[in-house]
Image (tube, rainbow, N blue to C red; front, side):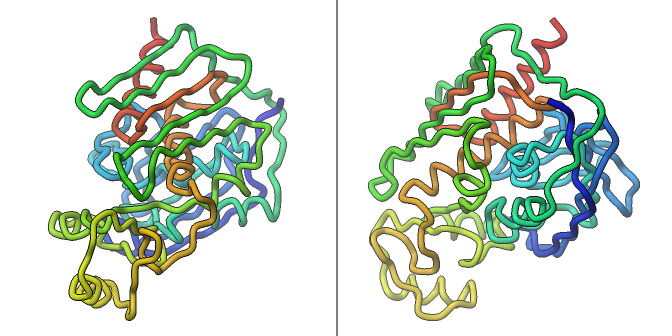
Length: 299
């Protein structure tokens, strides 16, 4: 298998989910053995897509170098991985990757329309020297990375939610990432939104880029207040979800968590040859596992 890059540059722009600020990114080709690099345009800072650059995992994955940070890198990293891209530059004008529709679909639709370019160097797969397991005893979360001949993911999501239930999702390189994973959007619980807004998070969130789960009964007054806050009239609750969006899959939320972990584990520095199993994955434990993998390479 030879390394691959993009055929041309692609520009995406919009607001960031957490900052609410407008940003623009341009994703384009890069030479062999470059990997994925973020470049902050105005500041002239390059940030490698590596787990040791992660400085925050509060609701998203943030990477930083020389005091310059970029929030919410997981979706674009997931898209590049799912589409088999080894080398790419991501030029960022702003402090956060735009949320777009809350999924990786805008990226894969753009990249997929043109296809990728095969390069002359062979892909250097990252092999796992030993089983790596990271646990969070408090939350019960687990990420396990085991040696394997091919890459595969199997995750279980359990929020203790009556609406979501326990959801599972899986992906390997033989499956259709674009059709099965990329379109799955981020999600939030209705009762979390006020807290997140009070803590200056999800400033860019609205009902066009997030599934809203209504776990507890809400009043019409609460719905009206939410409608006013996000500028959408007439919101209702249907089968435990806010009526803004229709689910692509019954387990779309679980599939989005799979999308996230694919992006977070790209911070290992390339394409893994490993079996990845996760229970209650999240950005914190995902990137902790990626950091442990990088440590294992130095052993």
